[in-house]
Length: 161
Image 1: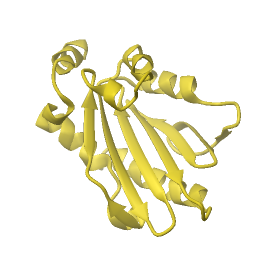
Image 2: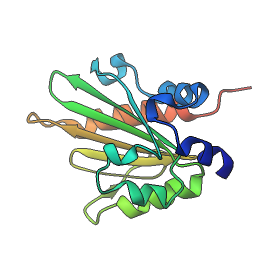
Image 3: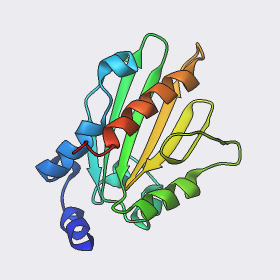
């Protein structure tokens, strides 16, 4: 795994290996699930994560960050941001989740160690750390975020054999 992460280190996010980019893109919810229009997806790797997380990328690098896919959705009542981080190992994903969890968060039964607060829902599942954020003046974001989170979680489950 370290060799794979090292290979990614010198690549730009839009030049991620096709298989990795496809795996991450397959986890994104579809427009129907979110109830809004998706924007373009953006991908980041260790070489350019700082462009998205200005000042916060180092925390991810310390915990095995491999790649991130980001997409924004616009609904009639909210803007929803979806960030799916491949952290290489489940233990790395859980650790990143613990680092970012604030005291005002409450547990939620999605993935492992899921938690939420107004306008935010985060969870881990396997090697993935998922961050969902909603901006709305109309309220109702907890229900929308939970629906999106459950959709992503279902996409992460292994296919039946």
